[in-house]
Image (cartoon, chains in turn cyan, brown, blue, green):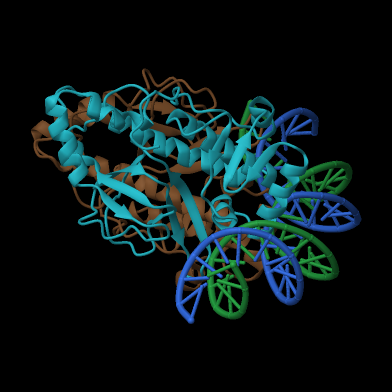
Length: 247
Length: 247
DNA sequence: CGAGACTTTGACCGTAGTCAATTTATGTGG
DNA sequence: CCACATAAATTGACTACGGTCAAAGTCTCG
C-alpha cells in the first residue's frame, strides 16, 4: 500500500465522519490545521489531474461533486461514478493514457487522504479501507445499472443511490437534494443518449414519481421507487450524523 | 487491510508469477506445501460461497475460470468479470444479500491468498496490491464496454482482453485460446441477450474477423480488431513467462 | 438412444439512438 | 438593464440496434 499511515477518520457513519475533526482534542486541532493546509480547490468543470505523483495516492473529497470517467478516442464518454463529500478514491498508478479522468462537477475541495494521517487508534485506517470498499461496491452497482436495467430503472436507481448517499451526509432535506448534473452527464453515466435521458425524466415527472426543479430533485415515494428500479440500498450508509463542516 | 501479511508472489509479470514457487529454495518448498494444502477445488457450475469468514478475505485463482456476478430479484444477471489463473480478488465484507456471487465456470482450484504469506521481501505484498488494482482497472474497462460500445465492439473488446490476459499467462498458442463460456454467460457479461450475442458472433465469423471452433477462439488480425473495438490493451500485461504450473 | 443444455434461425417488436430545429436558461459585456 | 452569445433542455420525425418469442437444430453425456 502506497499511502501508508492511518487517517484521521473516526469510525461511525462513513462519508461525513472526517468532518468531526473540530470537536476533537488539541492534537486533532493540529491535525486539522495540517489537513486544511493541504486542501486544493478546483472550480466547476476543471480537470483534476496531475495531482502530484498520483501513483497509489489517495484523495478525499471535502466538498462538492467530482466525476470519474473515461473518454474514448472517438469522443464517447463513460462516467464511472460521482464522488460526494467524504468519498475517497485511490488514484492508481500513472501511465495508461486513456485511463481514468477526474473532473470537478461543481466547485470542489479535495485533500490528500495521507494528510489526515497519525490517528492514535486504527479507526482511521479502518474507515479509509471501508471507504475504498464502498467505492468498489458502487462501481458494481453501477455496472448492473448500465448492463441490465432499462432507461427508466437506471435513472431512478441512480437517483436513489445519490439520495441515500447525500442523506447519509446530511444533504437531504425532506426528500429533496441538490443535483448539480447536466442531463449530458447523467446520460454519460447511465450509458444513454441525452435525448433519451430527457424523455425519461419527462416521463418520470408526468407519472409523478419524481420532482425536478431548478437543479434539485425530490423523491417522495422512496419505497415505490426502489421497487420500480430494483434498487437495494447499500447496508453501509448510516443516518445523517448531526455536525457537518460542509453544508 | 484485513488479510495482512505478504504473499508469495515474486515480482515480475503479474498473473502467473505465483507459479514459480517450485523453482525456489527449500524454504519456498515448505511454503508451497502449505499453499497446496489450502487449495480448494470446485467443479464447473458450482457456486463459490461461504469461503469461511469472507470478510476482507483475499483469494487467488490457481486454475480454471471463475465468474463474478450479481443476480437481480427478477432473475436478470450481470457478470462483472471473469477471473483467470493468477487473478486475486478480495471478497469484501459479508452481509448485503444481493451482493456479489462467485461461480466456477470450469473446474477450479482456489487458494486463500493469505496462505502464501511470509515472503522474505515485500515483493509478494506488492504483487498482490497490483493484482487488486488490475482487477479494479478491468472493472472500469468493462463498464465502458457495456455503457458505451455497440454489441459488435463489446464482443470483440472482451475477446481481446481475454486474449491478452491469457496470453500473459501462456495460455495462447498462435492466436488461439480456449474459451469455456456459454453464449449465455457472454450475454450476461456484456449486457446483451443470448440471441443477439449469437447473431453478433455469426456476423464476426462471416466477416472473417474471428474464428470460433469447438470451444476455442482465434484472433488473427489483432491490430485491426483492436481498432474496430476501441480496445486499448492494459499496460500491465507482460509476455508469457516460461514456466507455468497450470497448463 | 433419450434428456437436457446449448446454439441457431426467423419473424416481429420496442427501446433507445440520431439528426435537426426550437425553446429556455445562464451568463457577460456594454 | 438590455443585447448578444453560449450552454442546456426540449421536442419531433425517423431509424436501427438489440430484445422477445418460439421453434428447430446440435451437441454431450449418462
